Image 1: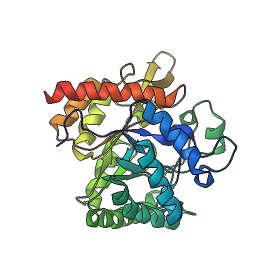
Image 2 (image 1 turned 45 degrees about the vertical axis):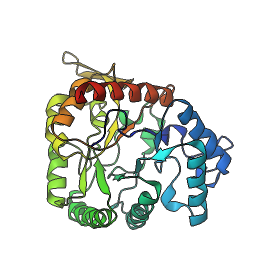
Image 3 (image 1 turned 120 degrees about the vertical axis):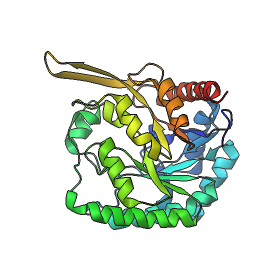
Image 4 (image 1 turned 90 degrees about the vertical axis):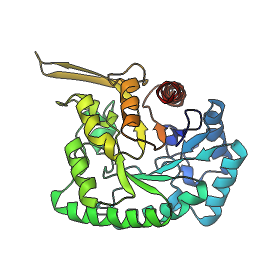
Length: 306
């Protein structure tokens, strides 16, 4: 069990995007570009990062470039606590088999980086409407096909076997309109997978930001926290006007959004949560907000574990 000071709290590197300042794909950029971005995060006090494939897709790098990446990490004094796959569904009609292959490669790479969790999900590429929206969640996106659910279970179980062999956990990120898009669906899916190395990423920020009816967040967390093994953690302002049926949402630091994370984190610990945290934020100075969120989580853990 971690202490409040040793608990891994990573910065999700998606804030930097997948292209270098000169427009080069970040996976092809010089190591000095990776180093400069890692250094910004290290200077904010982070010890851990999540090198999501929305930033540098480790699963697609050559062995030589993987070693180069590891050297940059060491030089910048950073560790990896988790590796996330984003919009890389293993049942994508065009890319599903390739995404599955990459997920398996990440299962082999993760122990080399010291990561304990590989995170994936069933969200797919943003639609043109989502790409044009101020916030992508304001437009409708991909909806999972119920007929592919058995295949999704089969492939997740296959990844769970690989994770277990390598001493890892596989976490499924909750995201709207996917097989793990509501608390009920998420619990049903992970229960049907029925694998000790497979759990949920209770990223309910993905849901409370939606402009649609939503159950109270306390009820949603209560259902999914017992199955959770990793946590993309972020918060939003949310407003609903029943008179007009209008909604509003916007990213907020953990301390100020609609979710009371002081209560939720303490409840998670009561239910046995012991996985890493990964801070995310959209808009503004994302990594700066993530650093504030890290300090907030650390203080909540200190109080809860006293």
